[in-house]
Length: 238
Length: 392
Image 1 (cartoon, rainbow over the protein chains, first blue to last red):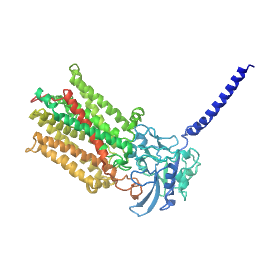
Image 2: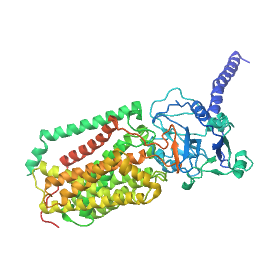
Image 3: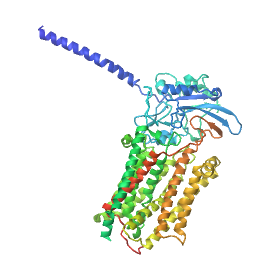
Image 4: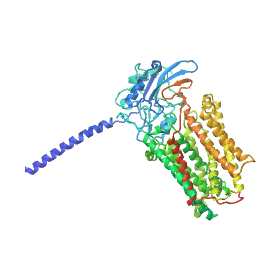
């Protein structure tokens, strides 16, 4: 074998090795960035059952957990984003008082999705209602249409965002049901944080899931059920 | 008259007015730059009052853009020569106001840089998306109509083109009303009366704008409007104002009859602070009673009074839109009927809103754009109505 052939062989070996070293981390990151490759299943419908009787007065652990998980400031002015809030209720006739957490109700027929001109508001096959931050033009029509006041508009430039939860100035946002956690097999942050386990998260379509079993046995209501939106979030004791 | 006309239009005053309008447009654009830079935090809008003063200006301009075409519709579709002579001017004003209104609407977006997304991603269930087609179609239809009226060879097509515009403007104003009537959960909206109400309101406001512009052009050219034409157009405006008031009254009376709506009506008509004030003083007295008096009382009815009536109708229009758009959002959503509600996100509370300078400048910028397009259009093309005296 001539000297040139050996050099050529060495050169090829080194090149292939270098190329592998150069591309491999990229491929790995690409895979990580794209997460799971299989699409979301329509057989699943994620939902929540919130037991208002167990929702402690003055406790806002779910709100704090949501803010931390999603990188929200926690500010309470009229221009701050609040994806989940504690609502205090008093029945005007009987005087009965209760409190509950309120967020995007992840409707089966979401008015926000109907009215969005660009399709930025969308519902995933598994029932989670989201805003595509790349398509939202910031018209706020979804905020006008939402019966639950669930959406916030980003009024100011943002800093220190959570990489898992991209947000954007001039776009609309709301509770994502912690989709980034759910896709990794975890619970939404609020459900996990509730000290009394008042927020039960699960698959409404699976008759064997804990949430389905409980919904079969206890009386639960949908907020503004008269609108016929079939919400994914249900309340017990309302 | 022709020489007088051209010398007048070239006069320094004309250019001063153009410059002023240009300055207002520039200030509007600067406001947009500020809003882009700082975000909507520098406006009065927030998470409860999500649409503010820019939307009032935009909707007023868009509705009036449709209404001003009354003049051309009556001319082309219903064959009234006195109106036909004014149809090109009405077409120009329509395009000008549509352009002004849409610019405001577009530049108020959270991401105006993404306007191309609105054209490339289309959600067929969204009335906003329908309106994108309706508005651009309106430009095309009115431009076509103007062409058939201003190009001799196209004259035979002017009637069908006028008919197309006649239908299109009804659909367009319906589309604008439907933006609100499709909002199922808001107590102020979500009713099918809004689209027809918007149509009739557009007649009144469009006529008022047309009167103001026509009077300005005639005064500028030292021409006198034919008495007969003036009387016809004045009375027509009066009828439209009454019809619009009828729709507004029906809307509120229907709400008052529904127990679930009485709290909202009490807020808008009685104890809501600025909103009842604007409704009763701004809309009812200034926008209806006084103009109707100026139009129909035998002691008035002169050209000056008609201009004054028109200006009052426009003021009343802005008041009504403020009450409908801002007041409608300020009243809290009924999420838990039967409960007293409190939260950190304004549940159960009246929303507060103070318009800020940038959003007012943006709205005025839209009016400036409409003025520039009209003033330049009238200057360079033949839009001044040719008088055909004593026509029917």
